[in-house]
Length: 343
Image (cartoon, rainbow, N blue to C red):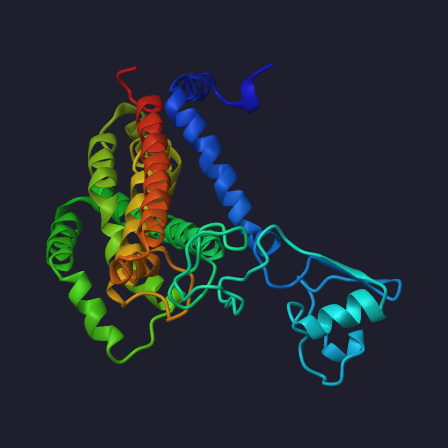
């Protein structure tokens, strides 16, 4: 039985990727961390996963409940960490609360610290707190998710635009290719960081705003690779045969040449993803990234720089970024070996 209905060529590529043990296990570890981060609300939250009150079950992690539903006095959102709400549920309501492993949201403040913030690691805060008494581990989990989702979205969108632009330039050539290359040379020379700093002075940055700005410049990473493949492939025999049979330009570009060009571009995906993570982290570190208070690895690095007396902040950010980027690089190396035509 063929593996996942793959062609013999793709089966050999998959076997070469799997033979690279470092890249193979890096893919497993990265996917495990990413899947866990997608369920961050079930791992780190200041709301219980499940509440039993007077014989009925409630799921505060998914639904907002008012304080009055548990016998309180005010129709506001229940604060489950409050001793008053705990007493209402556990004593008067004869119930219980099932908490996630980390009972803190990324914005939750620990008001019960015995030392001034930032507090060192303890049984309550496994990686300590930052200078605003927020749990570091909770912010790392949510920051990891935002970083990967941002970089993944940026990689997919920029790859689509870059592949289409490179395909058009390489297939048609001539003036289209000439003007396209001159435009890319001018566009790539613009100072991206300075533009972001200028725009951040009168626009409040957010996830989608940063994504749009970065997309304006990141799509050029794959243009040269795709363009070279199309320049080479447009004169091959199978393309001439398809043209002789009456196939249109669009069919030849995206059905015949593009699959061969994608072999070279796939190996760049993990490295583009790495670049997206680094870019977002750098902007957050400089203060031109996500809005203040957002979970961010760059903001954690900035806190470590500002609080040298709390080394756990800088060490945590360094370890998380090092592991994340190393895994992506190892996956990229395995993909490069798998799609290497010399093998």
